[in-house]
Length: 270
Image (cartoon, rainbow, N blue to C red):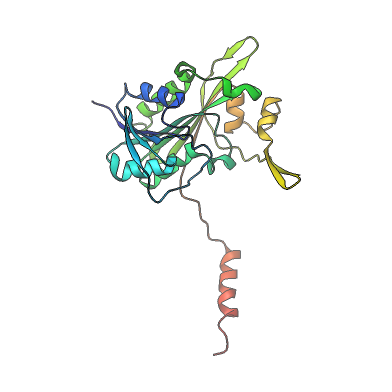
């Protein structure tokens, strides 16, 4: 089949509805090979195993491991000649800089970048309060996420997007109101919000960890500036953040001086 050869993975598991939606949507563009976890691997970040069991699946390969395991197994041996890795579609948003390292969905895209394979991670932001898990249960509910992913898969490479970005983190809103569902208005280029609202509360012998961002979003308290991923999805826009994988490094005088002083102080008597 003409078109790109795509490794499709995720962190919700190979049988999740969002994964099936992307598989079916992307299969009309190219050759899609599933290499995805056998079960839910949400929030495992870049966790890796020493060895994983792999079983044939009707869509490709089912891996008893993490999303990063899937990417390494796929690009390393199962389907090393792919043109692109797509990870998703995750049920739940992956927005904000602090989320990037803990998300299994995003981590799969990061891992692909180290193989020099461009990647796209895709998530569905569900604005429905405590009932969000009860929504997006049908592949059709992921239609906007699928359409956005198809568009980027079809055009990003030839447009030169991956000459500057290692991967794209895409978040698509699914917003329910009393009057009906709000359709995404447009696709906008964003950067991850740096707002951080994690906290902790002692509860006897237990400490509860709390991510207060979601409560703020449910209440409409979105103070993130224009241009951020969180602001975009809250306003019904499809957020696309172009990102690079390696941690940035920068030499500066203060640390260079400390390193030199350490040498001087530890030379000892001659």
